[in-house]
Length: 142
Length: 188
Image 1 (spheres, each protein chain N blue to C red):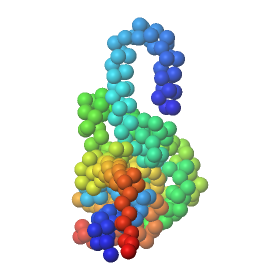
Image 2 (cartoon, chains in turn purple, brown):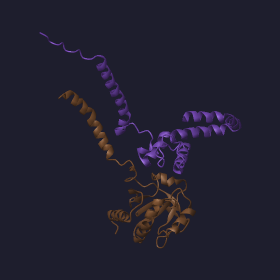
Image 3 (cartoon, one colour):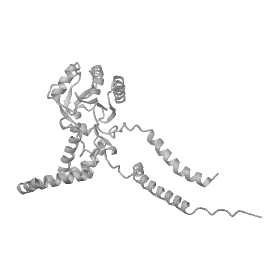
Image 4 (cartoon, rainbow over the protein chains, first blue to last red):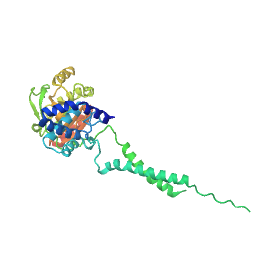
């Protein structure tokens, strides 16, 4: 749903964007690139206020301040990993929406896979048992 | 008894129980901060609320953490729109007065608010004994890993963050922490 909304917004603003691109091509290209990088990093950082949202999506003032800080640090030449490392140093790994794949966090990646594999094996065994019932023992008669 | 099935069941269930027992000991609302034990982030912010004698600082004066090295610093983030901040305000104001003349500095830092609102709020609350500074764009708040207000950081004389309290800071807890930091530093 979000993808459809985003696409409709993109197509709706295409004429305006084309005009802007014609008038101020160099500046928009730099700002657009910085904004794209900012959005990419901000989408990976959790909003401390609206904890289920990224700071890219959260309307809170703190999220806006953090986004601004992300933009400033990227503009200063820091890499996305360095920017994320800064926020992790302040808030802990909790600030990352996707847990870093090390230590106990690996369970978050491994458990779903194990559950799918285990469930699939269970279903396979169960189906096999249902479709191939054990033969009945022959009755003994005199 | 089918020991094979029992062993398989145990192998599946025991790890799940261990994981859940670990998770259930964790309060999901408590988010540990990585800052305690590390050097406090530097700041230099302008005073907008001077406080009261003998702890007051002139409006417009710059409070620099670097200038407070050797003292216990109690840095309290607050806002006029913060209901919980009202719960701790009187206590903090009183406790700050008790440490006048000692190497302790209480500093309030305004969070996501305007100095006008902050000044009005202080007046409504009956005054504030220590100065408060303004933190535009919340850069210092982010530097301290703030989730919301109120949050209080206790900075030891060596410049490291000793403790962090999330939520209203009870006066007796503030006294206990400040006294322990003074004792550790050898100050009376």
